[in-house]
Amino acid sequence: MQYKKKDQQLEVVLPGDFNLKAVRQISELLGDRKELKVDLENSRFVNSKAVIFLHNLMIAEPAVVVKLKNPPKVFYELISTLGLHKEWDLDHIIEP
Amino acid sequence: MEAHIYIEARLGILGSVTDFTYKWCVNMGLDQTDAARMALAVDEILTDILLYAFRDETGYVEIWYQYTFSEIEIIIQEMGEPFDPGRHPYSAEKAIHENDFEGACLEVVRKMTDHFLFLNRGKDGKEFRLVKRFASLDIRDHFAAPLEEQDFDVEPEPDENYLLTPVTSEDAEDIAKLIYRSYSYSYPKEELYFPNLIDMAIRHEYKFGTIVRTVSGGPAGYFAVVKSTDSMIGEVGHAVVSPPHRKRGLMKRMMNKLIEMSRQRGLLGLFGEALTIHTFSQKVNEKFGFKSTAMVIATSPKRTFKGMETELSDIMSVVIDFLPLTKRWRKPIILPETYANLLSEIYSQFEHVPKVTAGKEKSDSEPIKTNLDLNISYEKNSVLIIVRDVGSTFEASCKRLLRSIEELEMTSVYIDLPLNESRTNSAIQWLKEREFILAGLMPLFHKETDYFRMQRIRAEVDFDIIQTYTEIAGKLKETIKNEYNAIQKKGSTA
Image (cartoon, rainbow over all chains, first blue to last red; front, side, top):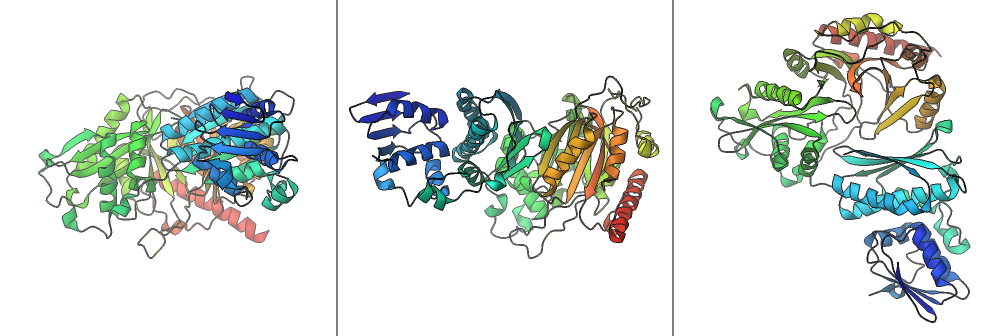
């Protein structure tokens, strides 16, 4: 997994799918940083454990700012299936 | 290509399994998005198995990847902690307001698949079945209205000018058009209306066959063998000769070619499923040396095809006709007492018969453990249970499996029992007490072994519309009818 740590930010480029293993690795790397950027260019899917992980980061006190780049099509279906499409501010979460 | 993997349930292997799933799905013909959906569904289930079924213990998971012309099915089996998905429904409200995501995994699996089934088989473990149907272009969409005769090669060529060649994937569209133009909407094997599905089946060598063309290149006939994935036999089916080219002996030429091609490929036998709404196919099979061995009462869900006012019939009973391509049956058989005479008569039709040995219960060489495989046909609303080993636990295992599929409310349940195991005799008795009736002999049907099929039908069967041609088929029909009526009578007096 490629990553860059800045003061308050962790930037990750996932080599594969955003699954439980990736969640655990990111969680370890993130520590108490305030911003997480994940590039999903190589991901075919994001699983529900990853979505729950991101959701918990975003509603935590203090909250972590989550940014996602290049999410696969299936990601949007998953968010909608879990009923989070209205809850998540996708315009801000998804980076162009 | 079917696949089977056996893995240890640990986090490090999840990525490899989902990679394999994705690639297998793409190779089998799913588009990349559908393949990603299936990979996600498998990942969701395996992740939950890893987290909750085995917790800190070492556990193992078996996954089967199965392909048919119209869909793929992935079956995940594990023996971890008991679990009832019905007790863990997902609620988006709870997720948002209480941060409770319980049931999210299966909610995602349901959404990503076309059909999801969970079976609790008690001591035999749990089973997750994920189905995705192929999204293909239907040849019927090419035509706004039924074709007129002039759309086809109206002028038949002289007989000597027909050309028979083995089919290739490039023939797929012509085959679909041939089916449509010859049968309109009424051909029972619906996958033949989809060029992509035909193309895929030929490329993966699930079927082989021959196509007849006129000298101008127009398709006139097609006949194929669908190879069994479980035994070295094949089904002759998918036969069509377009109306302007009929009565020219094309079917005979193609059948002879198919038999020759089957021998070249080392198949041990061919079988046909001849519809019983008429005797035409049964007559053709008999002419080519096929012998009737079973009658399978089947129903298919009523469906209305595009452009049709009426629904197709839901009765699809068939006679199984078998043609051995080998002189030697490899495995000896044990005749079960109840059907010994009938089976002897069925076998006596063949020039060469398997060696019959005396059955002795609880033979030392026979397995203790029962091994049951389950095949579900959602399209036909039926289930086939293949008994690989009739162990001493047969009754308990079979009872658990039947209970687990009870809520599916399948119209037909078939059970294939191996005729080379002595416990089959008592298994038949046990099944008869549970409303199973005769179907007949399924020669070399699984792992090159002769099987005995029983069937349980939860539908009204009108035996008057079932037509048989051969003497044996007639006897099978009579026995099945009597057993069916006895069960109906018992049910009405209970």
